[in-house]
Length: 383
Image (tube, rainbow, N blue to C red; front, top):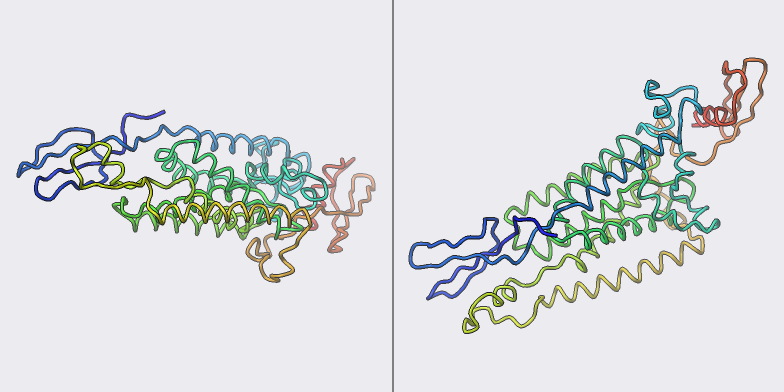
C-alpha cells in the first residue's frame, strides 16, 4: 500500500568517473545537467501510507476512556479532580498525580502485576498492560511521541515490520519490568514506544550514510527518551519497561530495519555492461553479523526472562537501589500501589476509617457508605 511520493534514489552517470548513487527526496524526473551528465532517478524505496500507528493511538485513547468510565471516581471517592466530568473525573492528586484512575481500576483492566501473572497464570498481563495508561499526562506524552516516531518509521518500513517491532518491544519491556516490579503495578505503552526509539537508533547505525541531518535525528531521540524517563519516576509508570522495550527494539531494528546496499540496488537498474556496481550480496557483511547476533540475543533473552518469571525470580535481591528507577516517593505521592486495607465503623452519618498500614485515622460525613466508597477513601488515607 504505497503513496505517490516514494523515497527515490538518484543515479548519476558520468562517462569518465562511472556511476554514483545518492538518496534524494525529489519527484521522479529526467534532468539534463551541464557537462553531458545524465541524471535519472530510480524508484526503489517507496513510502507507505501510515495507518497502523494512528490506529494504535486511537486504541490507546479508547482504552483510557473505558478505564476512566469503569473507575467512576465520584462513586468510589469523596475527593475527585474535575468533578464536572462526572464518572470520568480523576482520582485525587495524592493518589495519582498523572490525572487518572485508581490502582484498583488499573488492576481490573489488566495492569501488570507479578503475583497475578505468575501465581494466577495471568501471563496475558504482559501484553494488556501496554494498552493502559496511568493518567492524562502519561497518555499524552506517549501518544505524541508515538505519532512523531511511529508514523515516520511506518512510512519507511511498512506496517508489518513496525507493527511487529511495536508489539514485541512492548512484551520485552513488560518482561523486564516483571522481574523488578514485584509489589507495584505497571502500565503504559512506553515499553513499546522505547522499542521504536531503539529500532530507530539501530536503523540510524546501519543506514548512517543516507541521513542528511544526523544530529537532528539523534537530538530528537534524546529529547523523547528524556521526557519519558522523567515520567517514569512517577507512580504507576516504570522505567524498567522503558529499558526492556528499548533493548528489545534496538535488537529488533537490526533484524527488521536493515536496508540493502545501494550498489546492489543500482546495478538492477543500470546497464549490464556497467561494472561500476559489481556488488554480489544484497547486504553488507556487518549487517548480516548484527542480524544473527541480535536474533540470538532476542531469543535467548525472552526465553531466560520467561523462565525466571515463572520461577518467581526477584531481581531486586541483586540490586537494592534499582527500585528508585521506577518510582521516587515524595510528600505529594506514594510509590506503594499494593491493595490498601482499613478498619471502618459507621456511626449514624459518620464513617470512621483507620488505615491498617500507617495507622492514620479519619472521620467522614457519609451516610450509608458503600464498599466501593470505603475502598476509595481508604486508598486516599493510606497513600
